[in-house]
View 1: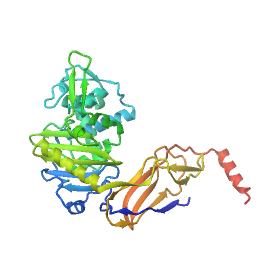
View 2: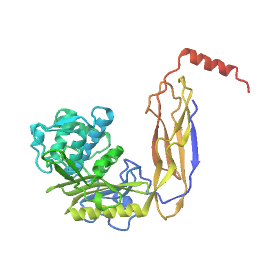
View 3: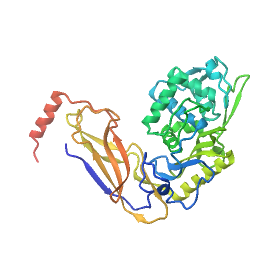
View 4: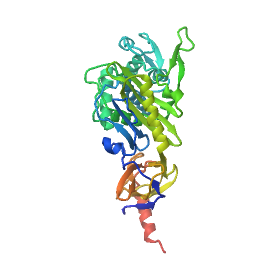
Length: 395
């Protein structure tokens, strides 16, 4: 079939951030080009980006391999959310605590061997109280053992392009060869944020476990920014004597969701100050510019030998790019390309095209376009009727 091409000239935008896109790791010079200040002066490593497009706004030593402490649990939560979405887990499923899970030290929700909690309660214990015991209990529920779960973690890290990450456990307790980077943490944080309900737990300041029992446990979020920084609703803190104070945080204002990661800060106050400074910079200097809004028509793709001959494609979400406030006006354009000679059957979710956004000739961002439905192959009789109707069409 002919390649469908739609080209639109969009309204001017202001100073795009260096044309970065998800997976693109700008070096320190280009990442800091828009900032005249050191945004995370006390951190060993840091990064700031927008969650939607992955555009890097600022970074500092973001590819240095460092111990992540409990930020590790972002991956544990991610695999839990995937299991729920896939139907392998339900929020109400009971999770039994093994002797091994109950033996974890450090931050915990004091699970007893044999104690059962629901998946939702365990997730609360991980997200808010950083429970090492709850993390292992969930790992064993999902994979059968922590070792098998850690393999899943490393497989997922590879899938996400986390090239400088290696996990040894599911909770971040000190271990040889357990490391990641601020950049890689940002990648898995963005992936976790695709599950919008996760911020119900990571963004809550306080809650209870075992509330109607003789041993109620008061949960207070280890991430105090969710209470004190406007728009903050996650994600995960971390601390060990080796890793120092770490935090992968997210906040949303006026349609812009930012992710800021700090590793190796000297204390909690300084860590939170560095994160707040990065957020302040992002929200004061940048905004999201809409290309297509959810539900807007993107175009029509023809499907050879399909039960339906063509498929109208609508934007399944808002397609936007990050823009700099108050800078020089530049021209932005977009193109939509559908797969050539697309043949049935087509699966729901199958990639059938892409939306490319350019600043001049430079590619700024690409969005994959997926089929919203399955399209089966047409039967002989349908194809025959379709062919004969064309033969007798009269202008």
